[in-house]
Amino acid sequence: MKREKTKLFTIGVVASMFNIHPQTLRLYEKEGLIKPTRSRGRTRYYTEEDIERLEFILTLSRDLGVNLAGIDIILRMKEHMEELEAQFQKLVEFIQKEISEAYQRDESIKSIVLAERKDLFKVLKNR
Image 1 (cartoon, rainbow, N blue to C red):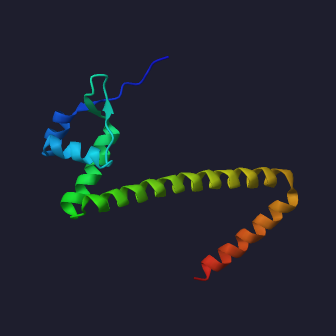
Image 2 (tube, rainbow, N blue to C red):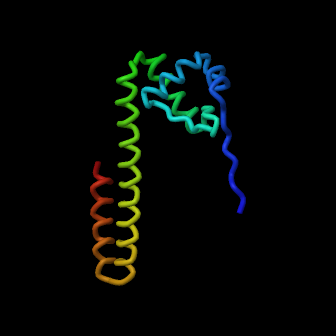
Image 3 (cartoon, one colour):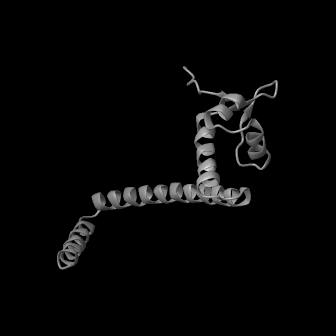
């Protein structure tokens, strides 16, 4: 089985990429805004996902003037929204599967769905 290689970046490379001081990255880590992986020798390594998150953090900070506490709140809200979106997508897929199975099992459901579609088209057409 082949393992996919993930690009890793050191603190110096990341600091250089974004024209920030490595201490800024250490501060972001201390505040829990980013969580780089560590080698056995405790060297920080940033993944491409960490880089994307850092770009978002810097946009909030530099472009929008959001302080670290605000950035933390925004990141938590963003993560929560992504979790909710994933749960919602699973629910939609479940409902679609259930409707599809019921639709195939019961002929009367087909006529209800078709009637509802016609009514919906009438409403949309009259707008």
